[in-house]
Structure formats: structure tokens, C-alpha cells
Amino acid sequence: MFVPIALGAAICLLLPTNLMAQSTPVPLIGAIHSIGQKRFSEVQVIAATGLRAGQDFDLKAIEAATQKLGRSGAFEEVQFKYRPDKGQMTVEFVVKEATKLHRCIYDNFVWASTKEIENFVMSEVPLFDGSAPEGGELPNEIRNSLERFLPQLGIAGRVELTQFAKSIGDPNWEHLYSVNGPVMKVQSVAFERVKGIDEKLLEREAKSLIGRSYSLVEFRRYTEAAFIPIYRERGFLRVNIESPTAKAVQRPQDPNEIAIHVIYSVEEGLAYDWEGAKWSGNQALSSTDLEALLGMKRGERANGKKIDAGLEAVQEAYGKKGYLEVRLMPETTYDEASHKVEYHVTVTEGSQYKMGEFSISGLSAALSLKSKWGLKAGDVYDTSYLKEFMKTQLAPVLHGSGGRPPKIQTSIKPDHVAHTVDVSVQVQ
Image (cartoon, rainbow, N blue to C red; front, side, top):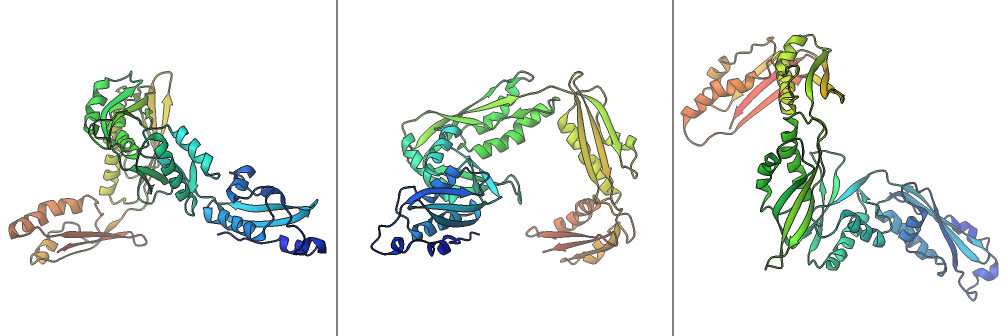
């Protein structure tokens, strides 16, 4: 929201009569100021207005500049005022900046570094600083600037703007700018600063990237799914693999196709041994039981993948005892001198849930299957039982019916007041 308020209108009444007369030359803007900005500088705000000291004082132009700042999306409110000063006019903008800005990333701009890209955009878009507001015209102004940057790199293409989030509902999404036009195929992948593991393990996982179209966000996601687990399985629990960098290494005969070389830079950190886990807040399961479920032995290499699976096993064990709302909050303590790691896991068990009602519909054998449901009302609810029922009881019946495989919908509805769970199965 922006609110242009011409506070200077009242001041105009105080101007000398001869200054207001039509025959008198229009005064010039002597100075322009802005106040209220924190993220941006005064120079940036003034540049974004499009006004300049020395031009004719024109109230409509000032109002237009106020509207322009508001439409950018960088400000929640914009006001202006003006006053006479030694035969000229001083204009002042009062702004309140928008609080929600998101980082800009350049998905496949392989011909220039991020710094080069952003320096170019900053030279054209005064309010750009590497981020952009959620709405307004500024994100598209950045896109237009990037399109003007491409010809300077010898690239024919269009720039597309989308929103990229790591997960649904992630409030920390990013403005993603991608080049459409040239085909950018990955020709090779390399790793830098690999010392603690056999580099061939990474190279083997990287083979599936060869031949793909390059995308920073997709290759960054692949890092988390493929390369990080290799290190964590071998005790490198604090490994960091930076976002990949990509370079155009050659242009084949087809001018619209570009060969890409991708580089991953690794910060391995130390490989840790398992010192143990300490549990607190647990009552339904003993610390001995939890330790056994975790599956790690003191002195062995701290296998991150195994630790993750162990914590999932603990979660499932609580679910089998009716604790649907259990929360595990692990905190990690690293001993850099001895290369050991210890987990401190706080368990919040929540309430124990009992079985409520069970229903099944959509097939002739529903009544018979309902009688085979093993959890009776009032029994401790077991989160794993529905899956077992579907496999051992429902699947054989559906398999014997022939025809097109039916669609199965399941519903699990916990009552957070009565601490019961109603389960329904519908065959369509």
C-alpha cells in the first residue's frame, strides 16, 4: 500500500504572489531528499523517483514519482512534501519500506558470475540490491534488465520469472530468473577440495547429471539428495557442498546448444565417531529401548544415514503405542579435539490415543473385512496397523475381484480432545 500525500500544497499558499503568477518563470527543484529508508540509501530512493535537481518544479511529476515508488513494491507507504528555498523548491519523500523481500537467484546464467549479473542490474534498477519485494513492479524491472544483459553476452533468449520454494508453504521462497532459448546440456561434472573420501563415489552419483539441461536449483537439490548422504554415511556430519557453479565450455555446431561444465566445491569438515545419545522426557519407552532403536554403537563411525533411520524408528515405535504427537528434538554436541559426536534428544511424548470407530465402504466384502479389523474401540491406537490391514486383509480381496485396480482412499481423524482416532477406508 502506498499513500501519496501532497503536504506541500498548504505551503504553496505562503509563496509570494509574483511566484504564483503565470507570467513568472516556473521555479526549479533545488534539492531532493528522502527520509525513512533503512535498507536502501537516500541516493537509491531519489534515483528511483526519476526526478533530478535542476529540473522544473512540476507537482504532477512529483505525484507521478510518488506513485512510481509505491508501484515498485519496495515501500509500504510513500508521502511527499515540498517547500520554497532561496527561489527554488526542495522536495522531500517520506517512505516506509516493505518488510518482506526475497533473494533473487539466476538459474542458468552460465555466461557471467552472480556479481557481474547483479552489478549490471544495479546500474539500471536503483532499488535492486540482490533481493526484491514479494509484489509490485520491481521484480519485473529486474527481469527486463536481465533481458537487456543477454545481448551483451552474445545470447539470444528471454528471461522467465518464477517463484522457487524448497517445500510447499516455505515462506523463504526465492525469485528465480531463468533463460529460455539456448539449450544448455551438461557435458562434465567436477568436485573441488575432496580429501576425506574416495572422489569416485561422488563421480559415480554425478553420472546421471551428464546430458541434463543445467538448472542451478535442480542441481542444488541433487546435492542434498545424492552427494551429502555419501559424506554423512561416513561420519562427515557437518559437510557443506556449496551451490554449483557452471561454465559454458564450448559451442557445438548448433548455435542454440551450449556445453556446460559444472563444479561442486566441498567443505568436508571432520569425520566423527559416535559417543552416544542422551534421552530426556521419555516415559513410555526407556532410554535403553530408545538407544537400541537408534542402532548406533559407541566408538563406531557416526553414520548420519543410520542415525536418521534410527530416529525414524523411534518415532514409529511411539506411534505403535498410540503417541501420535510425539516430537523428537535432537541437539548435537561435537568434540572437535577427539572427533566425537553426542546426541541429546528431548522427547515430548504428548497424549496416548485410543482406537475410535472403523468403517469401510465401496465393496461387497466390506462387512466381512470390518470384522477382521483388529483394533477394537478403546484399544491403544497403532499407527502401523492400517498399513498392515491393507496388505494382509484388503489387498487379497481386491486382487481376487479382477478388473481394473480400484482407487482406495483412507482417512485418519484424531480427536485431540477425546484422544481417539477414527479410521475409514473407501474403495472406489
